[in-house]
Image 1: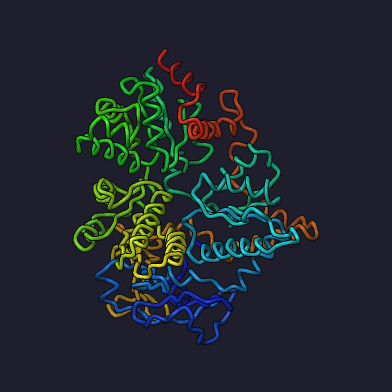
Image 2: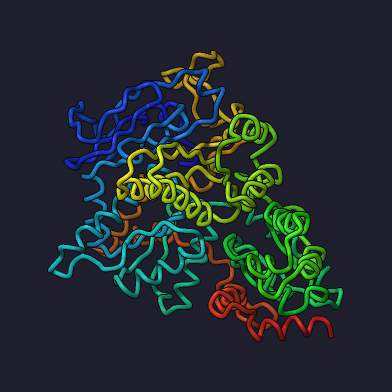
Length: 579
């Protein structure tokens, strides 16, 4: 299912019980908080394994005049606004479903790797499965519980590493990859490189799961941009974002020396390459994410404009750099001009204005892919530790640190965080904040996670699900606007990622079980449709195996992450360009 209907979103908002376990209450913005020790709750109905109760709606004025948010306290989770209610309603999944899914994963030897941006319902289930497996492992004497988690939620690079660990440590025989197509393709390639080429990787759907950013690098314009740099006989390094297809990486490698980067290591990658090859001599070609590239340039400019001393640059950025070399690096960075993620592209001016005018006391987080306006706010705040710019992991670590610091000081306060990235991140954030607050003796700290969604990015619906423009109606993510997006600014969720849902995962698990049980060839043919795209299989580019060429930039990145310098073979290729 690409989009959920508005009626379905509304019907799924509710307080969710934790089976027989003490529960953390999820309360709507108009309901009274319930302590987690209270147990009176009307029976929940089950439909395809989902148990939900109705939830009061938030006042329309609150929904429109302020961003939706989720307030995380020591004992409660309180969503503010219908969009937040839709996100929060899945944070506490029914334990019977969790137990059933875990039993199947163990029995069928299936591992699941998922990206941070998954549907919140699905993430809630996956987190609970992992937690339950680790609980059972503590008391397991039979050896039946796998030691490495069968579920991992991570960024696109770590998804492949987790899949390898599942195969090597927990002996899984198949992997379900929940993300977009290039992620399943990458996971499969990484498994192959680590000796698990026969382990199938299944996508949640047989349909194409695209990515606007990745696809912006697959056309002739991107190749022409690379060829232009390669033809100028100058030392050049193409730094390509990990969120691209294997085909893009292979084609790029055949044109120009290429290294992959993540949003976590891109800054250190260009700093080290520049220092190692000479900032005056090396041109950095960054693509395809235009916003990330421009934001990197903005970051370097901010360092220069803020007049960081050479000593501070060496201490806080890179030991081999100073003001002069940072200026040279900035001036020698060429950013691809036409590549954007549809989610981060939607943080427009109306959202920026609201952040600046109404949330001046909030910490601001921004993924490196977001547009300049939102990024600039977070960048400015990050210079005084009131914000962070970076990857999903950087954002999560920043929020964790701030909550932990406040808890350790015994402060009584509510910390506000603007979430400048995809809303699916909230599941990981809520889990981490809950753990910090639960382990703290101080009970006065709350964390409010604020979704910067424009009012134009939501749509009104009648309670029966029909659309309407009446102001007193429920407000939910705008299906008509692209799953919470609008051109006016504000995008909460990625429609491509949401092609992965709980129903689809259950179907894949069932298909694997039935196909392994009786060798059903028809079922196997159906499963084969869920395999990653294999555009490079059996192909050669300039006489080299295309898959090897496509994984080469990833290998260069891993070598850099281990040794903290560019590999000798990559340096040699770069130097040959200038001859």
